Image 1 (cartoon, rainbow, N blue to C red):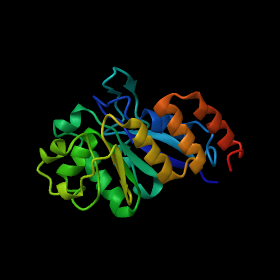
Image 2: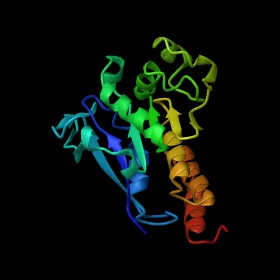
Image 3: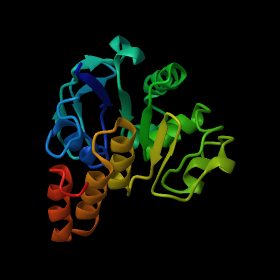
Image 4: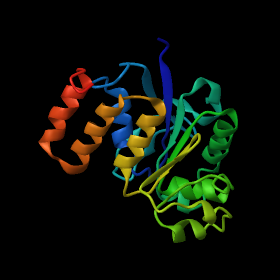
Length: 210
């Protein structure tokens, strides 16, 4: 099976926790339906080092200009203060290209505001931090806003910044990373901490839950 690449956009002020569950799950073959189907590569505006909100230095694997949607399985756009300052417009235009090509885009927190400003949420169901947060962008898609932790509509996944777990679950579903029973157990474990879900996770991943 050909290895597919999921691209994670990285930039100064990136909110470390928001893509963390998704990236770890994609890169860790444990419990996956088809292990090592995907890899994650970081992409920056350039290949210069960036520093996350948590102070972690990241050296992007590639520059945004070199990213081609047909060669990607998904573009993940984490939140961060830069979005609220009107930055990352180049990443927004790349997201537009991804969606036009039929390649999924997953945006969380501030990244949803970036998409809203560009009109990319005007005709698709979506969510964000709050309805008021997106209304401040003067976008025209308020009628499509859903008060949910995470929403998938076609090739677009959106989530609020307090919902990185639900964000990851939608990404895993879209990429078919886990079998349904495995994904349910994974989510239950990290959402509740109940060790019963760990047993269910192991059972599901070994075929015992089928």
